[in-house]
Amino acid sequence: MPETVDTTKGTLYLPPRTLHYGLYSVTVIYNVSMTNEDGVLVWETITGESGVNVGKSDLVVVAVKGGAPRIRRGRPTLQTLNLNPGHFSFDPDYPEIPLVSFTWQCREDGHEGGGCWGQGPGMMSNASPNFSISVNLFRTPYITYKIEVATRSKDGRTSGTRVEVEVVEGDPPTLTSACSPPWICRQVEGAQLVNPQKLILESGCVVEAGEEAVGEDGCGKVPLNVAGVAGSLIQPLDVMDVGRYL
Image 1 (cartoon, one colour):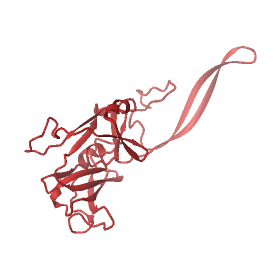
Image 2: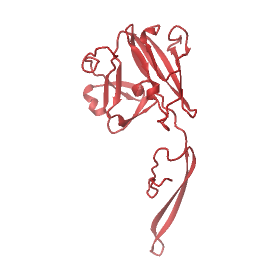
Image 3: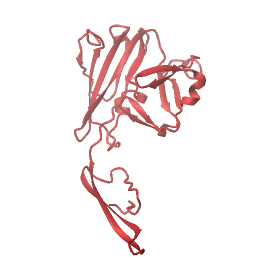
């Protein structure tokens, strides 16, 4: 053990990457004071042993900020679909080392299962960590398209994620959300783990370069819509009750 690790307390805390991958045997030795049959206070040493397996973590692959599994974009406007797993994805074991490869595919959601651009479903030629495309290139509005990306770490671990893109007519705002302060949330695939004591969400709109924002946040003055999730049910919450949930 490194000298910085305190092994004299009832709880052993190991900083990240203290141990390499592998199987370890952990032995706990502690002294217990007790009174023997003669009424004399004595000390007895007790030991316990357990096995600890340090394995490799799953890669966290996130395509859009916040890990939203479904987004909405409009056509025939000039909206752009931006997916950035190269920016938001990481290896929890070695976050300082970038992921090394990205492969993409796209298909329609539904019984037909067609392609996204009239060429049939399947792999995309894009191999970069990020992907941008004009929404106008999606061949049919009011269809949901599934875009999947798979990535690989330097040591060969693989993982992926999928984003459902609902294409509609018009120009819906591109919304973003994040925790405030950011450190109370930790990104996982498709969601964020949150400090259970309190949650504050900040939301806003992404405004393309050269476009003039409407209102202070770029979205205009829209009604606040908050939904709570209980199991598989999503139920609207009265905005006056938000303080009880967040």
